[in-house]
Image (cartoon, rainbow, N blue to C red; front, side, top):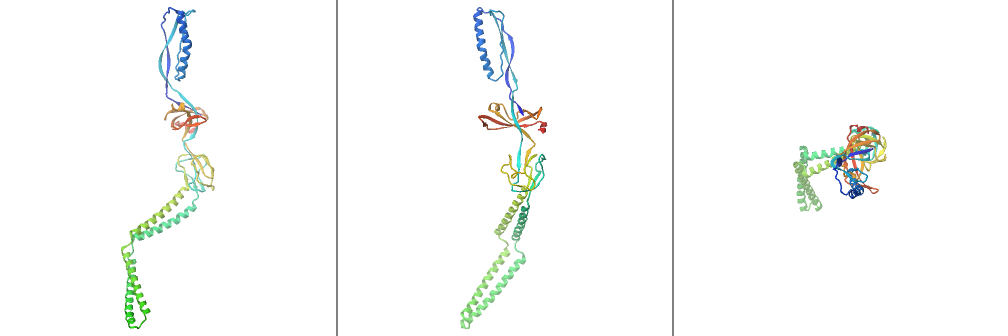
Length: 372
């Protein structure tokens, strides 16, 4: 395959001959000898200098001798006119897909289904393969139950205590107060008996302990009633809400992993190589492009859009610019010519075997490019 890149035009000289006037020379032999020497040694040097400049200039000089003794000479001179001609840069390259990628799962697993085969055209977002997700489904169910549990606890704190709960705490307070009254009465009676020596000190001390315990129970019941009537604290609600968000995050992670088991096409293209089949165990590939073994890739996808990659030398790259028109000839179609344009020029040169070159990418714009 060869490319002809239309470069910037350069000026050339176009000859227009005009016959010079003849003028006799009083000393023909000397004059003619001097001119002949100038033409003989000077002309080749001028042609060499002008020719090496690369502008395609040409000077034609004719000398007509009218007599054998060179008595007279007619010199033909030229007028110069500027003209432009196109210059084509020819280079060889290869046709590649604009994009190519190896599709592989994000997590290691077994291929459950494969929906395309080599040579199939696919659209962006089309399902290519599905990995086994049975283990993830079980984890998702467990996490959904945990989320529901945490959300119910949060709603209880937000709603506060029901009237029935407050009444229950009030009943507990009333019972504690009754026990305290009974303990105080027993302590008063035992104190009189103890002072008179009717009971022992140990019996009296027991009644004191019972009264203290009844007082503590009343205090606890009063605090519980106050909290029940005031509702949940804001700190408790915030903590419960954080637990709900944590459970939701874990559930979202599992759901994302389940979505990743479905491998879809990232762009329109053609499946050009299949590495694995249903039931095969595959793992994520290290690189998204290039050749890969069947253990790390499922299928290779290449875009429909083609481009030609060529390497141009330093002397040629100065004549290339983005958007420049290119004519492309392909070995497989020797009688056809495709059109293209320069789409990318490498910003940095590469050196291989002491040869410096720049990579140029040419997009194929011809409607007949589908043949390639």
